[in-house]
Image 1 (cartoon, rainbow, N blue to C red):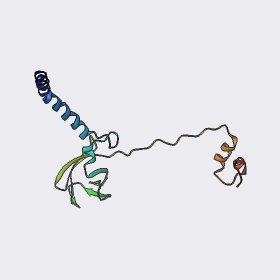
Image 2: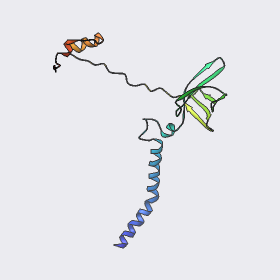
Image 3: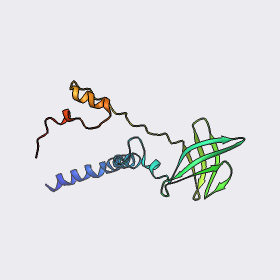
Image 4: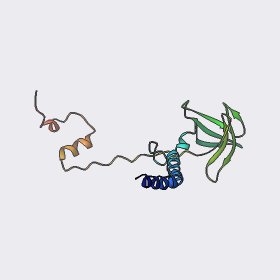
Length: 151
């Protein structure tokens, strides 16, 4: 019995580096793609304290809207001018991103795209009472209350 246990132990020990490597890969995958975050957003993106929300040009000056997530505050910062701890280094038109310094760290942020929800679906009904009510914009319609029981 002891000999068999020793052989099994050797097999498990021999597999430990492979199992450990595979486990590390899976854990790394969970760190970068959390199942608890929004779909399509990695946790590394979620940990960035600022977002690039927009840009505009006025004459020969360019301004960038930077949103501070914790403060829930947006600020327009001019390219090459330090303001409120933010410094816009460069704008990359090819991928709509901006390089900037914030809180002693350098970031390259892509323009945040607005998420547009699914529009409401039209409701179809063969019930003429519902069709009439939808077209009238509300109000009292006793015919819609005919099945209501009185107290």
